[in-house]
Image (tube, rainbow, N blue to C red; front, side, top):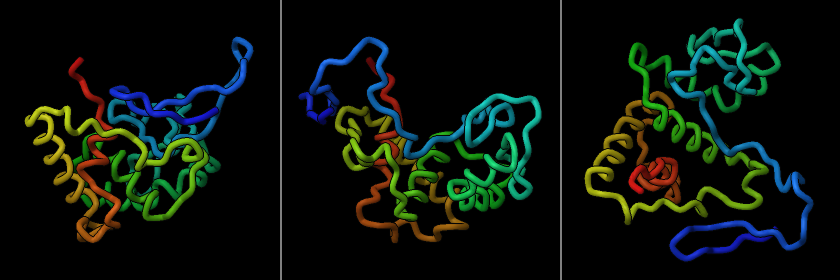
Length: 179
């Protein structure tokens, strides 16, 4: 498998050998993910399985897990987020803010993820040049919301690594809805 750039379409992957129909080509855990606000409480924050009875995080009371194993496995990703959720209670951030928060915490941890073997966060295309001014203003608003959300863990977002351009990260994780 190799990476390639497709003008006007972004980055891609192509196979270098023939494969059989149904053959698994690649598998890796995502770099970062969250359970959407509308699904909170109905699926495990770690394995994403639906279950009627889930254990609730005793600190933030938001995250839910299948059991102690999933909770322990998720703790590195949830630890700092947990403090942020507790700090802004009763408000709750938009899904994109929580996702970008998780990305930032993972980058700051300098955590290596198998999914980055092919593409890293910096390789992702942001399409920021194609966004309308209204959409850019919306992303700026999300970036300000993120600062409020992270303040208990990161007092000054401007002190983050220079490579962490919050606006660009939002542009990378936000789906362009104009086709």
